[in-house]
Length: 465
Image 1: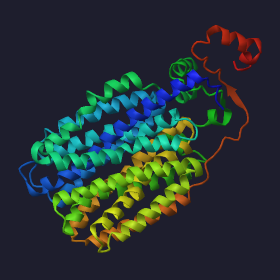
Image 2 (image 1 turned 120 degrees about the horizontal axis):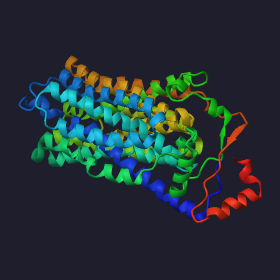
Image 3 (image 1 turned 45 degrees about the vertical axis):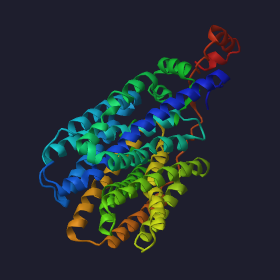
Image 4 (image 1 turned 90 degrees about the vertical axis):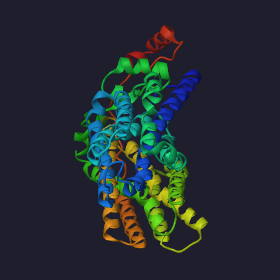
């Protein structure tokens, strides 16, 4: 239940949500750019040892996994501290961290130093992934939480699309170092804007007992104050301790496995799809075009799926996404005309990357405020175990001589497992304790002392204190 929203307050809220979702989306665009830029320059490393030294397929897979390991640890660290320090601080630190990391990575000249910097850069990206869904969900209006989450995380495939496009256009002229330096732009663009326009989460401040600060931000941003905090939510443990508590442990395990499977498919395809397409006869630029189509399908599918998730719930939509992914990955084994193959790849984009986006929305809406940051961090962090194995297994499969069709069948089998795990998630737990702790709502700007006196004269203000 939220306080009454005036027309002026609603206008301020819409502006705030627009800024928060836009900034979060741009941050995710650079995450997606980082995801694809390595895969886009991978052929350069494999074919020319003058850049980092000799890079075999197995070494290439290992290097790709270093960034994902960093993302895993970064996400888990963000989950451990984000529910305590706040969403905004973690977001700003993440922007600065991964921007510097991308710039320094572009200066490396050996596989060892390159791998170390990929890991360190991954720490910032992982923290950003883990915090974005939490912050956006807490600002999004009711009925549009999955949509706002999907818009933000659609920045990942959009960034992937941008990375593939820039690689096609600029790789020969800028080289791989120039492409990595592009990834450092947020420190001079996104970070200053976020510092000015991204406020702290009002629900988080209320859950932490910082009522005065929450009220001040509510008045400035138009985001309504919660009128009460259920006793059942107050009693819940904070962060990761809450995730392993009774009533949430099974759900925590299942969403972690779902995220790991989705990220495995996501990172496998974004890293190795160009190489797989080269093996079936496409040239380098043609194989990179498949990444564009994959990312485009992920964006459209996630945005469309989010509307159904807001209407019917995210669980059936995520299960359907996994099923569609499994079906169309298997269809990639067919010898079909190029336009049909491109259509299949676009639909695979929804069933893999698009589904991973919808999982973040499911998690952010499933768990309560006190553990929401840790829950999204868990999904992002544990999911990166699947992401780590994607590039790694891709390199091992290539080194072992596994056929392209066999690879697609293995990926389809993993997607089917994702369907089963999603259907096993228990129904979302609702607060059943009718007792609550009142929270005085924010006074709309312009109302001032008159509104307060009216509340108190009716006795309502005293009842809320």
